[in-house]
Image (cartoon, rainbow, N blue to C red; front, side, top):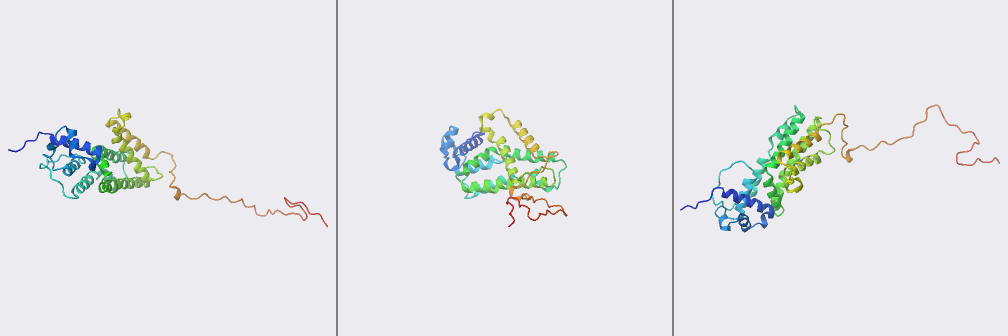
Length: 277
């Protein structure tokens, strides 16, 4: 007789596992920790996954992307070496494709600079908000897993900042974004501002009254206004190593035809006059 599984139990397991992995990291998490979080015996979990490796693989697969997927065959087997990392790379590549940013990079000039900025930054905000649970899990587990850290921070995050930097640089050249002292730093500021409002504010008790719509609206309004050109504003200075040194001031030349003559025997300034022998 086939073993029956309560409907919704797998989603409950994944929710509990995601919380435990986020709190303790992959290396320190045990199956007993997840079972304790659920209030069930560890044996219940093994009816759905073969072990901790399979559970982590399933959590990664179903928390990074939120699209509906078919229920996997249960129990989920232990993944082959490197399979979870490869699956995560695939999921992150799909999620960070950002088609509106890609379209903006293909355009030489936007029809409406404000509308384009709102679309690009809004798409970025929605990505970070949508994947905040999976991202928190990855960041915590990456502390103990160097390969996971290299994938998330080097491959994915740096590429995202580089694409955002290219977008800002192109719009600065076309005068649709104001001149910035350093576009890579500005791109990082944009990303970190959105990340705090879309994710980290949820861990701040003083920000409990900020809901998702208000956080998104405020972030976009603030960043777009800060990037658009200001009427009559001077271009921002470049980095210190690109600035021209100040021009040295030379003494004014004497007008031609006016030579200062000194009478014979007159005293030279600062010297006493010689007496005649």
